[in-house]
Image 1 (cartoon, rainbow, N blue to C red):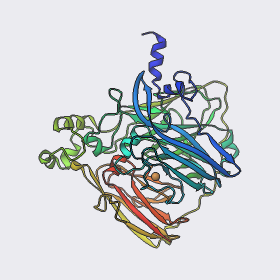
Image 2 (image 1 turned 90 degrees about the vertical axis):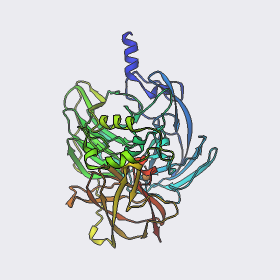
Image 3 (image 1 turned 135 degrees about the vertical axis):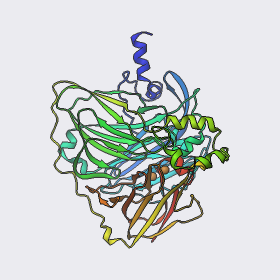
Image 4 (image 1 turned 90 degrees about the horizontal axis):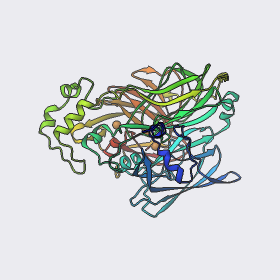
Length: 499
Ligand code: C2O
Ligand code: CU
Ligand code: CU
């Protein structure tokens, strides 16, 4: 193999497919940037089309059959606060799907998690981009029972809202990039069927891409970068750290924090977004790494964690072939259990900083963040996370998802506190549609800064209190674990907000 072929192999881009689609051909191993979705703008109205389809992409030189919105990641929909968006979605897949606008505060009648778009069908998503919502969101399918397969197959794209808060000088001086993290498991040109372990832990692939490329290099032209980060994985967590540099958190799921927060690392659970500034004061190659993270999947380092504490006996006696859950038998399971545990350190991206650049100063202030006062809550509810691991069944308050059952009824215009209690042995990222929330406390301790979230991770035994204001829209919406296997296997509930 010559050097050229080696480089080619090292690039291993899903982006390779862009070469023969409408995407530009990218220099080998250079971080691809997702294409912006073509939109038609007339005054304050934006029209756009998103289509889900079966896609043949090339990965590591091999063709693979995926489902995408036209390449991976799908095209980025960029809209502005106050615009009226008329987004037409067409399903060209051979199976039912729909489109969810993750994190956007729009009516649940529009962003309807229970709506279905049949093969060949279309649905119009018409909504106004809320003011004050500037931030990084995303879109993906939301058919209960099918989210795992469809998301893992590549159905995900970014949705970026721009607004007045972006006008801060220091932000405008920064070079902006979006980074979509996603892992893959591919065998013989296909995504293999889900094993029982996949349903239990949430499926993780054996390699990770950033914007569809394996370990690409970003070559900035400025010394201050604004990175919009999205975890589009089914179950993999990314504990992100940049070699020799802190990360300055400027935004969470629902937009800006008040001022940059210096952090040594940022944990991104599935579904979560964050925006960070990074500043380079010297030239060099700096790696953006995923540090080891143990989210409590079965099989701790050392191998016996689960067996000591949990139902090893039950496991030995329980039939492993539950309807539709795959075929892995005991030996395979044990093998994988020993292999699991903390994810190893990975280099996701290298940032090659050229000499002669000077970073711009950090913004002193970004935007005011309204405080949801938990003392004004009309109700405090408790949501206990549960699991029956051997069956790969997951619960909120002992119940699995039922489309015909309303789990929580709330009143439009009221504020509630939800106490989330993770009584399982695994992390679960809790996600609420429609209504952004604020984390009030974690294990009784007040969180150090105010931020809008739609997804919050709970480690095992953690208790997290969130404050939610049910504003603007009445309707039926959902909350669920964003390890989408858990969502598909019951960890979802229905919230009805009445006007
Ligand atoms: Cu991205 Cu219902 O979720
Ligand atoms: Cu969502
Ligand atoms: Cu979960």
